[in-house]
Image (cartoon, rainbow, N blue to C red; front, side, top):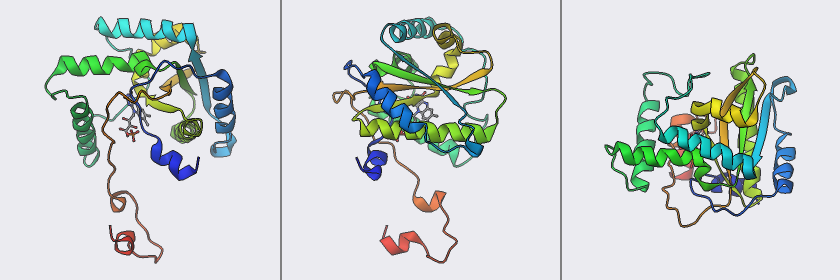
Length: 231
Ligand SMILES: Cc1cc2nc3c(=O)[nH]c(=O)nc-3n(C[C@H](O)[C@H](O)[C@H](O)COP(=O)(O)O)c2cc1C
């Protein structure tokens, strides 16, 4: 698969079939993703791959816990800053609107939104997941390295005809994850990632993106991209 095609076809898939994903494929993807760049080649990612009975156990523990209304584990990092400013606030609101509209859920229907959210901890039905940890002594640059690594994993999964959904939601129940994975104390759970074959019967709305000139400035004499391409 061409890289553009991998980028275009990757999206956060939230409905998977139970078709298993082989260890061989996951090892191939993760071995290739290990070539992701990182400052001074620190390779700060610590990845746990979970399938089969341990994943079933983790899903069960997490879903039961969340369904029972247990409070989240205390945060080890802020998923979003409080009082987010423009344009992030508007982008987040637009995402929420799109997401719940695609599920046919009214914004004020809190219970239906909760039910949809709980699917996170069932990995949206996926038969495989990974959990990515970062050493708590490392800083923002290493978190960025880890993001690049995770994107590389997601693109390589596309080359294997697999889909994924990165999930910070797992950090909210990080102690349940730790119960099953037993990571060393020095690690912070950044996110989980569901992995598998897309269930084509699950509807979705493709998320949009800000126009290029909102997020990219060309300062090199090429001129405005929009005027060249007619967008
Ligand atoms: C670090 C990270 C964490 C995310 N956490 C969640 C999550 O917990 N649950 C979820 O359903 N989607 C999660 N997403 C998916 C985003 O909502 C999604 O990437 C974004 O809306 C853009 O949509 P797209 O990936 O389908 O293009 C996460 C994405 C990233 C990069």
